[in-house]
Length: 373
Image 1 (cartoon, rainbow, N blue to C red):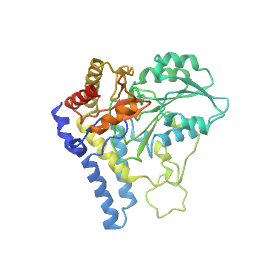
Image 2: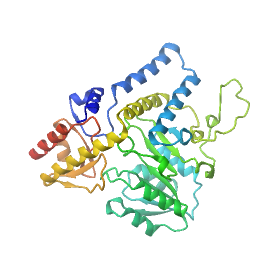
Image 3: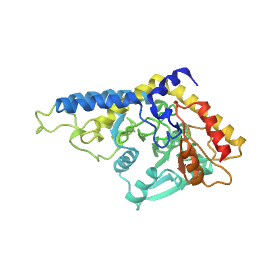
Image 4: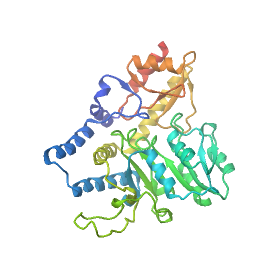
């Protein structure tokens, strides 16, 4: 294991007791993040209030850090609660008509399906299936001049299969189709350079590969896309304020994605996100991505040796899903949980999702126990 990454294991006390392979479900919170949140929280206790200007300073520092991490501009980043809120916000901004159609993946995580199904039942949905492969070919057969939006997961929640974002964004740009990406299973695990892509919208909660706390997330809106959107989801803090002395003087809307931060933000979550982004940046997301691909490739290799059924994962990510012959997913999940492994059970597959804090020795320990199951 890279020595620099090994030094960061001390940030995660849970690793002393368990082999934690569940970043795709919820990663543990680093000690440094807990301390940063506590320090901010103590100001409320000791001072009674934290001035809005101080809160906004933290918010803008975090916005800049996120933008640098994603290779975009701070004006393109909006803070919100979670992935679902990001998707719901985008749908409100697009002014969908019954004559439009949408391209979705039927095997997406529900966060990238339910808002479309239940909020816009009158709009036609055309489905592809990630696990069938040749996704771009499937999409090409579904789109027409009425296609308004394609919404997909960057990394599939179960198989770990990552999209070719460059090819997909080019496909959409050539046809004038909006592209929305749910990035929650990729951000913090794989490199992403939004400057090199033409994605209109990208959203993600921060409780998985970006680490907790839960309840904070981001929405990226491409600068060139912002002026095309229908004004919606706006509130008084969608406008530019310096202070609140003259609240009766009408203010102008911000000309940035932050206009969709319509009210008081989750500043505690923003403080946590800032610390987590700082930690990931110290390690380098390129280094993290390479390490995770190496680790999961080794896991796949060992799983093949014990004849496990592994879902195809394409170029790979931080996720590996498998079954063991002769055992139900529930029984295998219980077996591993009893032995101190933290994994997920999804669609009767065991989903392993190590992060940079995991070691090859932990992978070998998993394989050793699987042989006993």
